[in-house]
Length: 134
Image 1 (cartoon, rainbow, N blue to C red):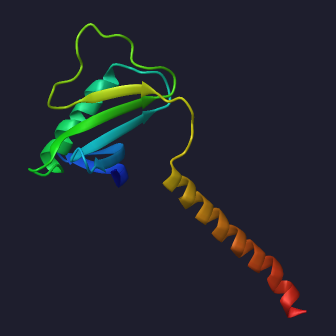
Image 2 (image 1 turned 45 degrees about the vertical axis):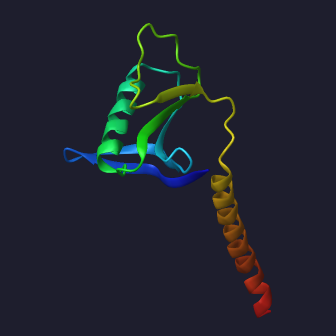
Image 3 (image 1 turned 90 degrees about the vertical axis):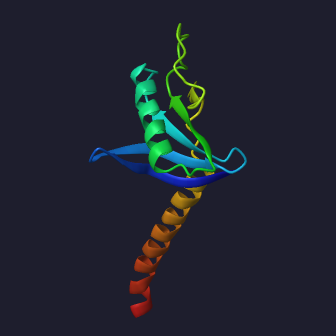
């Protein structure tokens, strides 16, 4: 039960812009979920960046009756290596996982299919229009 809040969701902190890859809202958990997508392997600095985003979202976007924001880092190459110290606080849960397949989201597929369909319709109209004038 997710609600889509934005792709490349814009945050402004101290006059600088930052963009979160995906921002969702989970209705049952009543919390925001920030998702960062990484092409390469996991790097420890991803955790610091995500914690920065979580703090900013909790200050600027989260409402008083909502639970703390959850962060998810998805890496293409491999999952998080074992860490000797925890990288999260109970107030800001964080997860990282290897992406297993580059399968697009259903809403993204629908959007692209509509775009392709519109482009094909325009091409068909352009091809058929000279035949109509004969």
